[in-house]
Length: 222
Image (cartoon, rainbow, N blue to C red; front, side, top):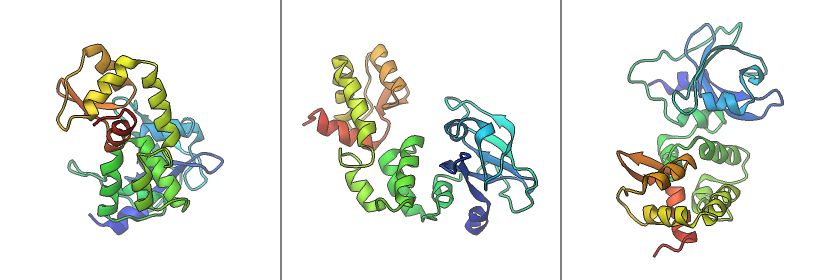
């Protein structure tokens, strides 16, 4: 993969006010742009999306719960593009490029090891790092604590669990185990709906290491 080409083709997806919601990259020289459906949704819908300050046309918008991608078109674009192939895996390095960070793969892997590719968690991390509010190393150290950038997000989940002791007990069981765990189907469904777990067959594991570390501490897993 020619990463200089990738960098040239990757752009920020922003709102009309200039707030970056994510990134995308050009997949045709005619301005077709591939991004995530949740990024378009975060921007307020495709009508609100701005790329280099310009509006876009909608070609396809998926569902963030099933096919989380969107294809937009930037009118008048004449430039480089990344031809897609069946085995093309851009990973989250595109995100770092779009935020002006241009990370190496080891840096991306460090962040992904903590947040597991969770779209919201990735975006929060890159936003604060791009603003120079925090370094990657400090973010990784403070992420599972209430002094880190995810404090409000984590506290909300903890509060919700404390209102439902049976769910708190269930996730405590999951984070205490290094292997997948089988839960009651209703408890499993609720925790999956909250975005705290991921499935492996009929069993579950924490969605990411951030949740494992935080809930191990706050729920006093020995």
